[in-house]
Amino acid sequence: MTQTPADIRIVDYRPDHADAWVSLNEYWILDGGYVIEPKDRLVLDDPEAAILSRGGAIFIAEQDGEAIGCCSLMAMADGGYEVAKMAVDALAQGLGLGRRLLEACEARARAAGASRLYLETNSAQTHAIALYRRFGFVDLPAQPTPYARCNVWMEKRL
Image (cartoon, rainbow, N blue to C red; front, side):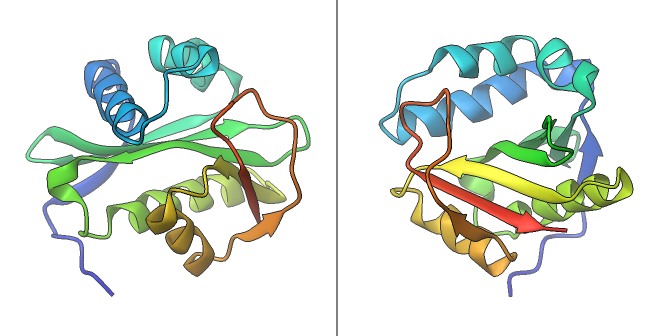
């Protein structure tokens, strides 16, 4: 298991993280060969309205005050939370940040009494899917989604 450097902290999103939140996510979306979709624009351009004011959370991985990773936790109608918009800067990949961000999401969801974590991804995201499986996520049948790129659905019961 990879050790995350001790100087990397997982913190709650602040308004000064807005530019990094957008750039980290736009990078993985475009680098993966996908397009920025309308739902992406909603959550990236106004995370306060789309996520935070609706009972969700955004976690930022910081090193020396710089945002190098992020992940959101979006409240769902069924009492669960969707894990979304996980991104790690290319230079910080392999440091275990994805796992730390998932741990922050799970801890917050458990504290809120959530019944599950849910996520949507694409089968080309093999490293992310492997991480999700190691973290206890299991595959679900296809679910309704606003994302054209989504073809994998997973959940972790809490």
